Image (cartoon, rainbow, N blue to C red):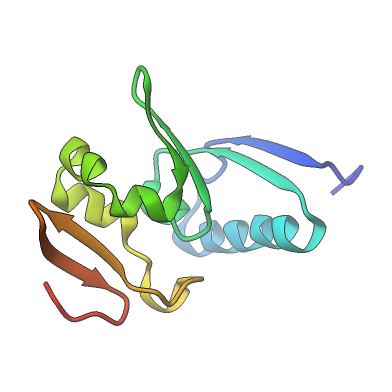
Amino acid sequence: MVGEPEILILDEPTSALDPKIRSDFYAMIEKLNRKKNVTIMLVSHDMGSVGQYTNKMLYLDRKLVFFGDYKDFCHSHDMTDYFGFETQHKMCWQHGAHSHSHEPVTIQKSGQTKLKAVGGDEQ
């Protein structure tokens, strides 16, 4: 990369990529972020893939819906109500072996645990 930028702003950079190349791309920008301290701002509709790599999330739907840590998004009752249980599960799935965190993600609905992903077995 020329010029060693401090920030990269990417708009749907993986929309036309196959799954292997998409994974390689995300690994590359994650390396830039962690090893070179490059801030990455990425616009995407692919919440499931992006969730593997993000630590902060801004979700817009004609207005600000959520801003904060990705983990907080996944544990938010408000976001479960907004998206529905199944959709939030798909967005928050920590992708098993590809996860950068081995902590289980628990999604709750109506005060009752519905799912534990990554190492949990409650469903």
